[in-house]
Length: 377
Image (cartoon, rainbow, N blue to C red; front, side, top):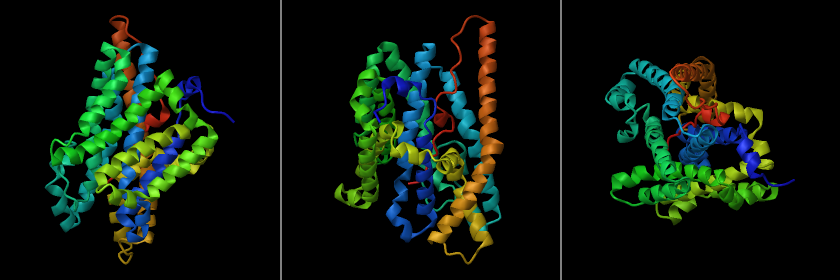
């Protein structure tokens, strides 16, 4: 067996192993919320940063390949894809959360004062941990990243393509400057997103890929995978050693970024995380993440004697949430993605009728089209 080549990487249209990685992250987040102290060894709170790295990597890869293919990055198409991918399911679950909590007097009192922030994707500025939709703060973080990063990438490329990596490094450096406590608490998440974006820029470059190509060899990939597992299980000790979660999060994000190349090459990690059950969960991880609070209300409503904060509760909520996510996947997510693609094609056809335009971008990496599912920290 051999390592992956740059041409093979550029030719990859699917990243199934990354779906499996998101399945792992989604499940440990649910267990963090509902499985109690016996699941603490999973460090589920940090699972969100797996999603952030994967998100930064995938959307940047999509944009870079679009530019290679068409000569430009279409902001219109990018934003339309994100709107139809994220917003419909988000608002459906937010409405379902409001309805279920309306019949739960105390839950509704906790939720109604925060609906304005939730409805406008300002979730990260309203961190009331006792609200039923608190975990959605990560969606607000990603929305801001989706708004700003494509613009920065286009501007850097307009000046000189070789400036893209320096711009990403500069962005990370600025994010790490502790201007204020409030900035520092938010900037760490953008830093992790930018880590994934930087990885995409490096791998897209022939020279950059050559530096990380050894990680795609099966033997090196197995070593990296084992090292990442040790890193993940050592998160509590790492947090204590670095005197806080924020520094541990940055180190963990770098660890996830170094893991990703090993999941692209022909190794055990890619094989394991590409198994159909894991890909199935990963494809539905956005819905699984969003609907977990509604699923918990259903579980504890049907089984009031089930102990909140037990492994059994974590399993029950995860199963119910996955069932609901599967329904939403077929009834909301996929139809809305298809509708968005049809709209883009219609707009492209209208533009073509008025004069020559660059061809519309293809779907890009299939994993990105399913979008990362943020999780609560």
